[in-house]
Image (cartoon, rainbow over all chains, first blue to last red; front, side, top):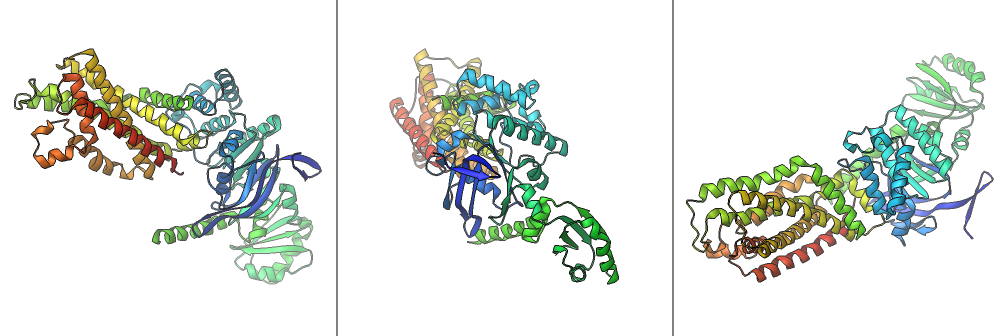
Length: 340
Length: 249
């Protein structure tokens, strides 16, 4: 009897099970005892700044990297016990391009199909189907070198699907693409999940991407999962709306606004982010309280909470700030390793 | 077998498309052949070879062409690593050995085809083939050099992170292997100590083997040539496969 996962009253078969998964590189703990389960057909997002451990997690699930500790199964197959078994059932689109630029789109697909030992007749049929799906059929005999970034990405997704994997890994699928192409790709990914029932696990540091695409999101920071829920629940957890006030004196604002109807305040980087219910009604009171104390306001804005606000509320930093500090930590780590 | 064929097929497609690379790698041995061959033909007389210097030089240039092309093909996996394509192969449900053997087969085929091109061009400037079996023997030695040195290139590439060390390897490993092989001069004419060094160069046996096949004369017994270059090829394939298994990306 397969194990089942209950979430939002829907019963799902488990596609990925991760328990205490850990990976160390020297002294650095890139992934730190994370556990989660992904149901079949789900789109699951790993959201976090660069260097948070998303790609490392994905690499371990894809058998590209050995875990230091903990276990992971994909479709019930242990990633350490049976590498080939896992590899046959997954498709991967890497963060960096992995196409042969000297070959045509069709030849790249053909190479992949042969590597996965798909018989010729089925292979040819599927290649044509998939190239049509990603709207590259009229460019199929062109060398990949002549393709744009978006076309390459689409080709890689088509290639990742060629051997009919039940789980598709997408590592930063829209990194470096223009907004229009990004939108287009999101539609493809959503369609894939809906029509083919493929489980999709994607990493991203784009809030909007996680919000629009994923059924559930794990927010990951410094190798740990700090929050895991549906995007809607995560945003609800903030408690209502978000008011952002820019000011040279953020500490004074926090002092002036100690009111019971304010859920929380996070001063950071020249602005205070305030979460509260029914922000529109309280806005005039907020302004009165601040200006009454002679505190200058540079700007003020009200918006519905985004995953960025969720990240901020858990870490006290925005993703971009966190990225800067993580890069710094990694740089120091590299220096240290170099010295040894 | 079908995985090895798949990877070989990719090498062939890339090879056929890279016209500039084909011409570029024929140019050097061809120029050597023309400049050295015609330039030194009247000056150099080889007592053990009744014929002229060009006849002596042709097998050496064929071997040179195979050597450089095969090492270069092997080292190409660094590019696959840098351009990300290696990931695509490594994450597929295939063994590292199959990938390595496919690369080796592809590199060796490319190298032998390049060598054959030099051989055919040589026919135009005076090479006379002694016998068909001899010609086949020469091709056999070309195949062994091709496999051995492609595997050698893969072994080197597996331990290198990027192309930075490439020039160093070319200048301090590949060029000496070529220079000390007796491709340009008869090894018997070297002073004793230098002659001894050439005996440690696997390419010496390859060149002598090809020379035996094409001209019917060689300074080393062709059976010994076959044994040494054959042994080198097997050893290199083993070492290359071992190091390639450890490659990480």
